[in-house]
Length: 390
Image 1: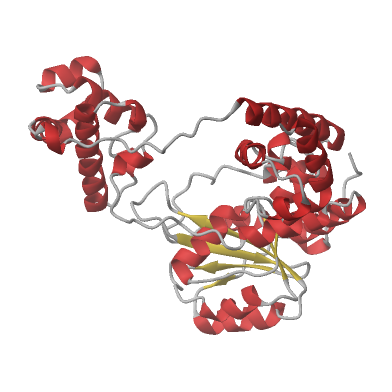
Image 2 (image 1 turned 90 degrees about the vertical axis):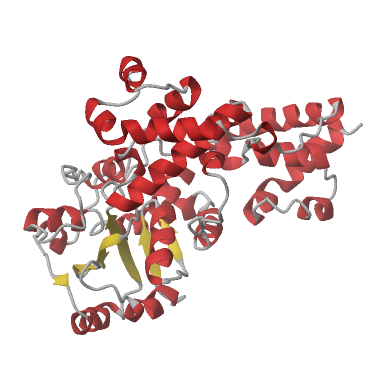
């Protein structure tokens, strides 16, 4: 492991400027507009409210660090040009959630992103959480006591703000180390391409589909049980919206599934099966019975059916190609000290094995394949497929 990196002097000091209005934000942006690398992190309130929102945005360069109170200041349009600048690297750790949240809440799009968590994975590092990485690289121990705090509450204490800034104030230094190591082993272009793709992720929209489609285990249920499940999920969502609480604080998934499968017809049965706590039983018990009873009266021809994707049988020859690719991938992953799924995931291996590209042009037609994968491993993949062609 590389020796501990010395942090810039400011990083050890308690610096807690909080931006609460547009004028302050404009001044803060002017202060970092000459920086070439800026780190970002955010805090949200998903554990406390039905519709989550970004509550705090932390920003840090090598020379400064500040927090933007996005509960008091919901207009971040001043930041949009900075996020779109190609000459400024925007650094996140585990950027997927941040990218989705910033676009959802503020319409912010990002160009030239660098994800230090993703970079760590491509370096073969096992513990890629920010706490583990900072401990390894800088011997910095992050305090996590506010990790599950309701960040929508005001006022924010000095300790909370310092906690939040500690998650972002080391990102620029960390990114420089990781980029150098990636460049030294020839993988920097891999991460850059992955980060470019990451910039385009967006939150799923509510398109009116049945709620059971996103419920784990629903695909195994029969239509009548599926109908009860959907009714209970709709009831939970309605209550969560009304009370402005996250779904799991109304009823957990395990409770919902147990109620759908057993379909109790009395409060006593719900209590005996321990599907709900006494408090939940007092608040929701009668409504749950009503919802279950109503859904059991749905006519057979109107019961929901879980949609099944058409499964195409994989031929014996394709199976051999897939196995050959997996064997090659696993050996290559060990050699490169990288997670096999990061190198080529299962879906991509199956797609290549079925489509059996044996020329560069045919390999180009595999749309799920990244450019770095084609460039680095394309010839080897084609050789394997030619050997196993039949």
